[in-house]
Structure formats: structure tokens, C-alpha cells
Amino acid sequence: MSVTRDIRRQTLVIATHNQGKLEECADLLKRYNLSLTSAKELGLPEPEETETSFVGNARIKAHAAARASGLPSLADDSGIAIDALNGAPGVYTADWAETDQGRDFVVAMTKAHELLEKKSAPYPRRAQFCCTLVLAWPDGHDLVFAGEMPGQIVWPMRGELGHGYDPIFQPDGFDVTFGEMDRWEKNKISHRAKAFDKLYDHFGD
Image (cartoon, rainbow, N blue to C red; front, top):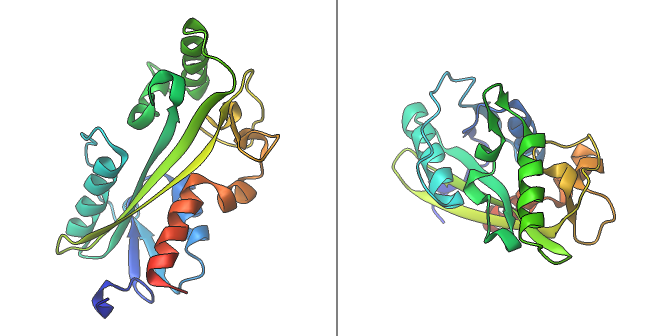
């Protein structure tokens, strides 16, 4: 691997305007000696996410930040895919929460539950949280790392510690939802953590 592709001891742009996502990525990258900044801190615009796949939208964000900043940039696109809904909401995970008053994930979770009920989906109602990381350089080169956390959809909503669809997602091997799990404990086993594990495997410790 060319040394120019090694992100360690470099400045890396996290291609997000979401402070929570920036903090999670910073926690997951703390083993590397990195100087981190974000697209928001650099004043970069948010590109329109026009793709229909996680990797497609992550590529849009990573390459836009790399071109604009002249620095290697890391983006993620993530969401929940519910088996009985043919993988929906998928890349439209956040869109399901859109209301006239802004994003409301109670609305999104209720929609998911009602659609499952309408289909009389059998239990367990299998689902996966998915995360795709794209690490891009200003010259157009990129690397892709994907992770999934399998589990099931539960109802009613449980827990107030997470965000998004966390209160209705119970990961395999646990009797609590992501919404009932400490944020940093979840960060160790989540779909995003699994994607970062693959990044570590590529670059080494």
C-alpha cells in the first residue's frame, strides 16, 4: 500500500454536519494519531444525496468533501433495513422522519410498525442496521468498508438513550434495544463499529 494512502498521522475530514456522528467517528478513530475536522467546521456545503444505495450516497459525501478541502475525507451513510418491508426504509431511513416541523423519528418508527402490522409480518421481525464508510482522497481514489448489525424490530418503543430508530431495534445477543443502551457501549458493537473494524483491518494498528 502506498504511504500516501495511509490516513494515520494526517488530517482527516469527517464529511458530516452532524455533531453526534462526528463525536462517534472521533471515538472510533481514537486509536490513530489523527487531526480531525468536519465538513461543517470547514464550512463545506452538504451535497445532495441522489443515489439509491448506502455506498452511493457515502461516495457523494466523501468525494465532495475531499475535493473541496484537498484532504482525505471519510463519509458514512447508514440506515435500517427491515426484511418484511423488502429492505425499507434503507437509504430513506431519515426521509421517513420528515415532517412539516422537521424530523420526527417517532413518526418514522410508527410508520414502520404500522406497515409491519398491515402486512401481518411474522415474528421475529428481522432487520439490520447498515453502515457504509467511504474514505476518499482528492485525486478521486476511494476505499469502501461496510458493516451490519442484525436484530429485530420490537414494539412499543423502548428507551430514550439513542437516536433515530434505536428504540425499536433490539440487536441480536441482547435483551435491550439500542435506545436502552449507553451510547458509548452501543458504539462498540454497532453497525458503524463493524465498518470501522474493517477499516482497521485494512490499515492496521
